[in-house]
Every structure is written in structure tokens, then in C-alpha cells.
Image (cartoon, rainbow, N blue to C red; front, side):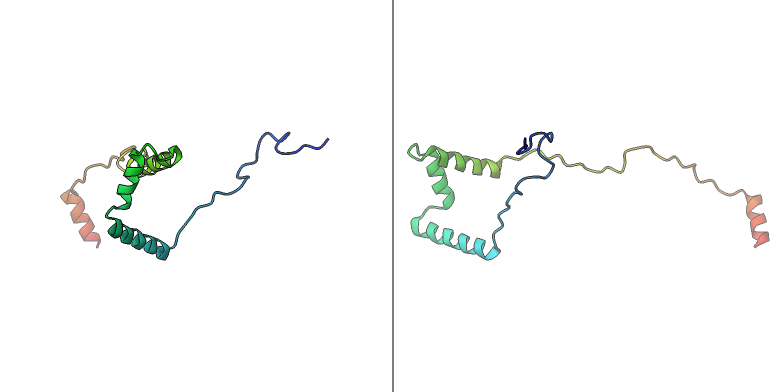
Length: 115
């Protein structure tokens, strides 16, 4: 009997499966897109943001479109909690050093005689 999939192995192996695709656009593409949006805003008198707001509040817009627009807005405005570790160097045990004391005069004279 042949086992298929991850049966008999205790689950999928670490790092197995398709790697996530990260979309990265060139700066030239972004620049062209911004120029086209500015031109269209001048032509229509409405910015892209105004159009998005109209679509969100319009009940005739499809639900999935409104949901995606709301998600985009929440991604922009909602601040996610970060789990950043900040190193603090003032914590931990403090090494106590003795106070600096002056060398007594008799030892100072002896050290000058030797040198």
C-alpha cells in the first residue's frame, strides 16, 4: 500500500510548499501610473481618493469591491502592533567600581624616587 501526500509522516515538512510571490513594480511603472491618475483627476475633477470614497458609500457597488476598498483603507490607516525588541543598555546588573582615591603622599614620593 502506497501512502500519498503527508500521510504517515506526521504532517507537512517545514518550508515545504509554494513560496509566496512578492509583487514588486519598477519605479518607472509607478511614475507612469501616478501621472495617469493625476491626468485623469484633472480631466474629471475628482481624485482617485474621491472616487474610492464614492464607491464605498454607494450601495450599488458590488460588496466585494467595497470590502476590498475598506481593507485598503484599513491597511493604510490602522497601525498594527509591532513586536519590536528594543535593546536597553541601562538594564541588568550594575558593576560597582570603588571611588577614585588620591594616592597618599608617602607612596607618591616613593614612586617618584624609583623613576
